[in-house]
Amino acid sequence: MTIKEHGREEPVLEVEVILIELVDIEEYAKQGQKPPRAHQYKFRIDDHYYMTPKAELTGREILTFAGKTPEAYQLRKRLRHGKVEAIVPDEIVDLRGHGLERFITLPKENTDGGKTNDR
Image (cartoon, rainbow, N blue to C red):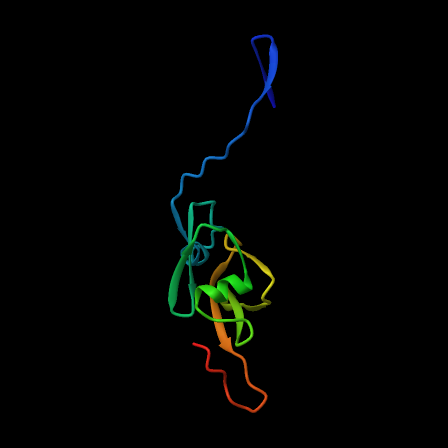
């Protein structure tokens, strides 16, 4: 897009204005609404809440918020109406995805039958 000024065309930058400061993705999912763009996104992993300015995170980044690693823990996302889906470490998760309520971590089993000791 350009405008003509002083006899020459100048480019015009389009800027998207984000008016919402904080979006709680769990609340939007419970209301059946897709979260809007925001400055910060609040999300839950197990029983703890976290905030990030990023709308998209990898499974590894989500586990890092909880102080866990993909080597020791599996990650799941819980969607509206109770549906649960696995997330692999390098998978990108859009926190604005419709119906995304929260995340769940599960310890991976060791080959000797014991559980890992990571948090």
